[in-house]
Amino acid sequence: MKLLPRAILAATLSLAIAAPLVAHGVSKGAITISHPWARETAPGQSAGGGFLTITNKGKIVDKLVGGSTPVARQLQIHTMSMDGGIMRMRQLTDGLAIPAGGTVELKPGSYHVMFIGLTQPLKAGTRVPATLEFQHAGKVQVEFAVQPVTASPAMEHHHGAH
Ligand SMILES: [Cu+2]
Image (spheres, rainbow, N blue to C red):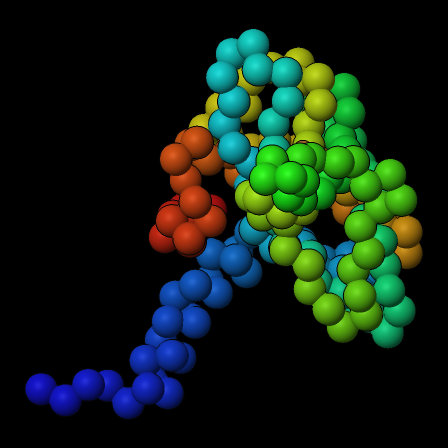
């Protein structure tokens, strides 16, 4: 049997991946947020990470400057970088720039949202409400879908439920 033409195969794959992203996203002004998810945390764990993709369809740069969530004392924007062979997290106190016409992915090992001072564990299968604040787009309400610790973003795409 012959292989599918490359173009058809690519179209099929991108449809399969795009569907859950569209179903679990939110737009405000020029900003679109897709697929916010968080890692589940163990009881007593004081902080957790949140991940999402931010697209800016506007003509000017916007900035994710902060936010809040009812499940933690603080919501911070973090970056990760290698420092002498050690991964270090650092708070982006000036915010995270989203270039005009660009997309920034917050993902494990890179930029992420940090829930500091959790008031309850993040449980897999639940959703964590949060407000993200942008310099231009203003406040955007999102819900982080909490995934088991073993979940990678790639695996998560196969969960069609949300
Ligand atoms: Cu962090």
